[in-house]
Image: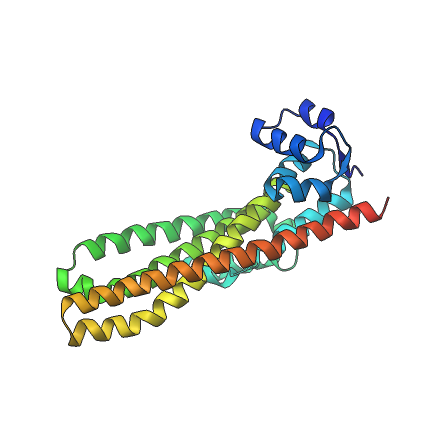
Length: 250
């Protein structure tokens, strides 16, 4: 079980120049623990490194469990985009860790992601066909709908990533689950403001309705940014705990 890395070993693995320079600036030629490399280089770089190393069976299981935990975030968002059987298969992998369901879960999740994206294209076409006044009225609801589809797409792709390459799937699942949480927060914020936006469109001048729609987008983006940061930070801390547990065993 390898839990350390130095600049010389890192260079032999042919890292990107930016990541290598970041490591050098932080650690020089010293040999450091992977948890220290996480602090200097970030989760994505450490997951890239782990994909280059020979992992023990326990390390692989830990990373799989971590990726599945990330995939479980907002898992329910994909329900409208897959069959009952497909969702059951996905849950067997994500929630129970059933290895026999992993490949099928990956296929089902990718199929759901494609369905989400197709639904988004159809919604965009329908929106373009509306009259100007109708579009003003529904601007805030469009923000909520778009965020909901993005959350579902990210959730589905997080499931697929958790069933892919071991170490890198952890990094992808973190990014996608953070994105799904962010879009879900955006959906909620936009939906709340949409109520007042719709009312404004019905009873006031177009300018007021546009202002309400703009407020919905602003609220959605603020909520999205905060949710992404919170989810990613929590995921990074959980990942660091895995590295620390490996280091404690030596």
